[in-house]
Length: 62
Image 1 (cartoon, rainbow, N blue to C red):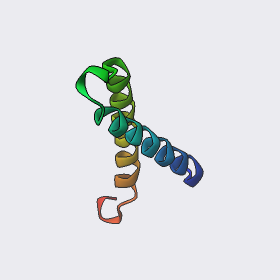
Image 2 (tube, helix red, strand yellow; image 1 turned 90 degrees about the vertical axis):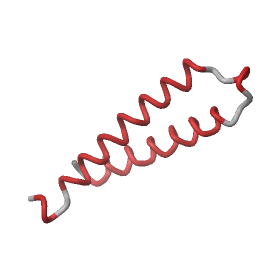
Image 3 (spheres, one colour; image 1 turned 30 degrees about the vertical axis):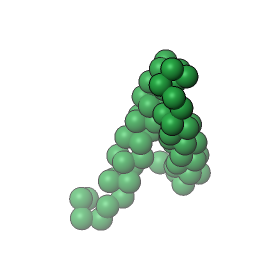
Image 4 (cartoon, helix red, strand yellow; image 1 turned 180 degrees about the vertical axis):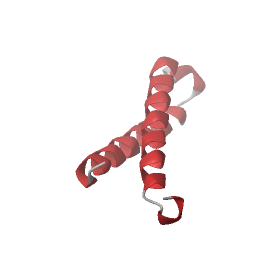
């Protein structure tokens, strides 16, 4: 994966996880659960992609 695409995925994942944390600090009645679940799913997927690409770069695993 190229450095630029990896950088874009990192920024997107950070923005999504910040949005999740802002959503979860709201009082229980104000939380939009559909939005929270969607953001957490997307954040988890992006984090998984990042972990896979970073583990491919570890020298002792090659």
